[in-house]
View 1: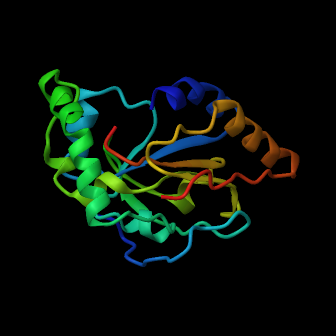
View 2: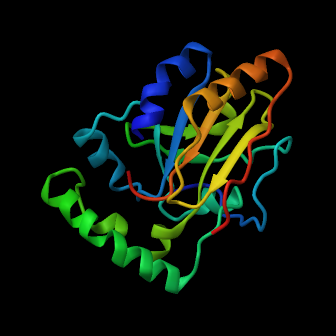
Length: 150
Length: 51
């Protein structure tokens, strides 16, 4: 979130807004909003319905177990430090293995940029997003890429 | 709880229509995509894990 947080003011200045779609159950959303400074709308898609609607995929049980084991120490450390409010959001192994994605949706509802990648890949640089937003106003949208398959 | 329950086999393509959705916002209220884009383009960031 840190990178997009840094780029958020410039994205706003260009008339766009970031909407963060998360795996957080709706019941935990207000807890996050009280505990953390959320720079842009933080949307709770706890049942992954919107993830699936946008065609994002999950890896399967074995990959989920591996990812869960790898990230468990970091999750516990975060909870101990007070950086995460609960272990509950991690309780579904499926949720640990979704793809990450960025879609830029123009005002006519069409996707003008997309980026889909494995959850461990970095998000595109803010400059890329800004160029995509600028391209919308110029009428020459640029296409993103699917960086990696999971 | 989201209002859409459809599944999609393929990611939404560039040039395609973004599926509308309505999701609860942690800061309060509900965000509907078709309403949100009235104010300007929307960057939808789907995170892979809890952040």
